[in-house]
Length: 210
Ligand SMILES: C[S@@+](CC[C@H](N)C(=O)[O-])C[C@H]1O[C@@H](n2cnc3c(N)ncnc32)[C@H](O)[C@@H]1O
Image 1 (cartoon, protein in one colour):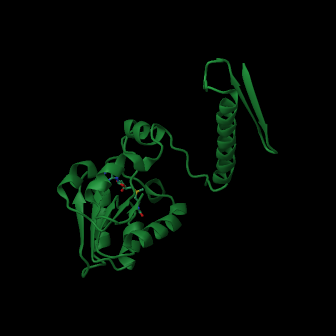
Image 2 (cartoon, rainbow, N blue to C red; image 1 turned 60 degrees about the vertical axis):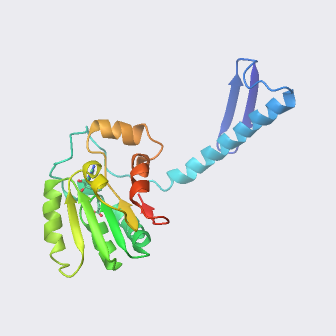
Image 3 (cartoon, rainbow, N blue to C red; image 1 turned 90 degrees about the vertical axis):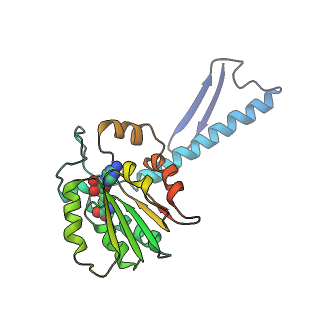
C-alpha cells in the first residue's frame, strides 16, 4: 500500500493507494512525482473552495420542483434581489459594443432595463412563460422608440429560427426536475447546455454572458 499525507494549517489530506500496480511508472521517483503533484493540486482546489464559499449567499430553499414553464411566480421566485448587481455587470458587458443583443429569459425585466440603458441598437428577448410575456408587454410600452421584440416560446424551439447576434445574455432557470438534474446536478456549469447553441448564433468575438 502506498500512503501520502499532506498537512496544512486548516486540513490534512491522506491518499492511500491499495493496488501496487496503480499509477505504475517505470521508476519509483516518477510515481512519487505524479502522486505529489495530485496532492498539491487537490490541496489548492480545497483552498480555492474555501475562498469561493465566502462568496456564497444564503438564497431561498427550493422545495420540490413543479414544472415552472407557465407558473405564476412572484418577483423573488423569478429572481432574488441579490442578483441585481450581477445583472448590472452582465448587461454592461453584453451591451458594450452595441449592435443586436439577444436576451434569453425576461423574468422581472431588470436585465432588459439595464440593457436598454446601455443604448443597444436592437434587442430581441426570448421568453416562454405567458404571464411573464404579459409583463414584457407592459414593460415595453415605456420604450416606444426602441427596437425591442419578443419571441414567445422555449428558446429550444425559437432560437434555431433566429439569426446571429452581436451579444447574448442568457439567464434562465431549470423549468422542471429533469432539467434540474441534467443542467445543474450533472453539469459542471449550468451554462454547459447552452454553449453549442450560443456558438451557432453569436457573431465572432461577441460576448456571451450566462
Ligand atoms: C431568472 S429569470 C430571468 C431574470 C431576468 N434576467 C431579470 O433581470 O429579471 C428566468 C426567465 O427565463 C425564462 N425561461 C426559463 N427557461 C426558459 C426557456 N427554456 N425558454 C425561454 N424562457 C425560459 C423564465 O420563464 C424566466 O422568465
